[in-house]
Image (cartoon, rainbow, N blue to C red; front, top):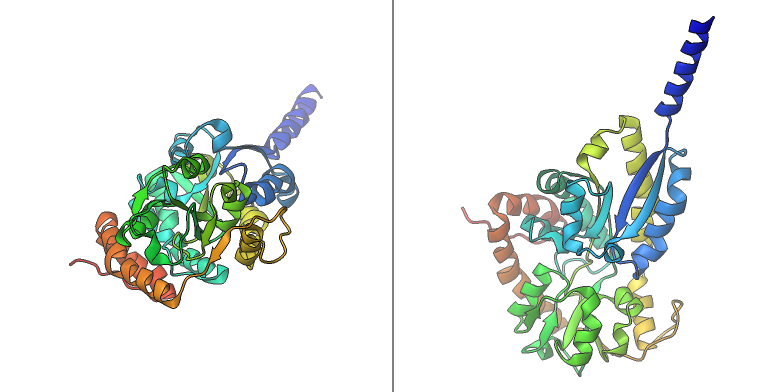
Length: 347
């Protein structure tokens, strides 16, 4: 009888352990921007348990709240400091130059085009996460299209020549330099003060991000040439932690991230630029709050042609050299086919 009771108790305890809720430590990207506020926070803190039949729950913070750089997120993730990390892919290209191919400026004018580019790059990103960072890719979410905020008058792309401009990533900075600007590397959080003090003349970020961070208070002209792409945010999990989950749980978690976070962020990106520009310029209704009064500078056909020519003739070939011919070939066979661009690859 005692043995029967002990067996029953053991089975009950094992059953409880088998169905124990997985607690995840999650680090998101910038806490003051719409992606974190509108999508990252509700998904990880409220929606995840319900979407996974209570199999997962999460404790969320952001890398700026932790006091770490965005470039350190994937390194620390691979070291097992936390379970899941989200950071802008461009922040990590010092460790993985091939990752620059995820977000190429000027080649995706709409959210649908950007999503197609990201989907084409996804197998490459999966391999980069495995090989470079010991991580499993869970998803890729967009920031808004990256545009140019300037403190001082600009009327066209040519006016950026000689100006000090903060790029949103390495490829963006290389493009600015090829166009005659001086590319400056400054953290996102340091941009307002740098614009105000004249350390830089202009800075590239998403229109919605710049609005939320108050860049319109220290700049007066908005050039909507998409010089910085879409600044995709990689969502990844420590590979050992992921591999320790049952296959069903792995699939459940990936499906939840796709449906509850990634897909919602992409859906919101549709038409988001127009709304963000309205908030920054006062030209249209601003649902996000008080409208600013920045001067809108729309790129001309000549601006787009000139920037695209420099991208294809100088910037992408230089990236191919740094990333290596194998990665450039993979890019040509995937992303390049989607966006209609071929990067020259040295034999």
